[in-house]
Length: 110
Image (cartoon, rainbow, N blue to C red; front, side):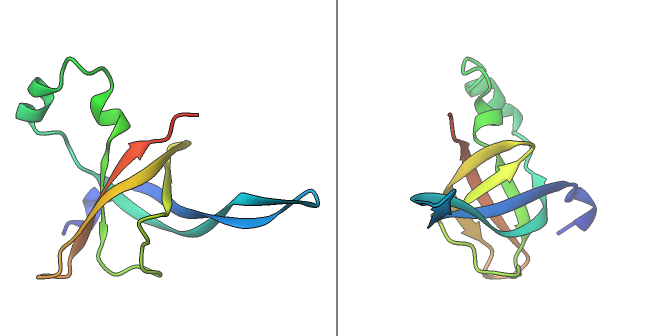
């Protein structure tokens, strides 16, 4: 793991029940924690295969973060990166070396 490649700041957040302006609601955004991440580059072969899909990689980035974090990441959490929100579609922790986690996200369209 190269820490110098982790140059992007991402925030994990969850949606919990709460109250907004005195009205009960089910979707209050609660920040869980923020960490440094690397956004994986798209391999050339994948770029060529998906070049017809405009914005393909922008809508499904893979975030690489350190294995050990402040909290255990839950699959129902979401990620905020560069003012865009992403749902977690898969997680691939490296249990062998306990070095990094790869988390694939998909843009949440409003």
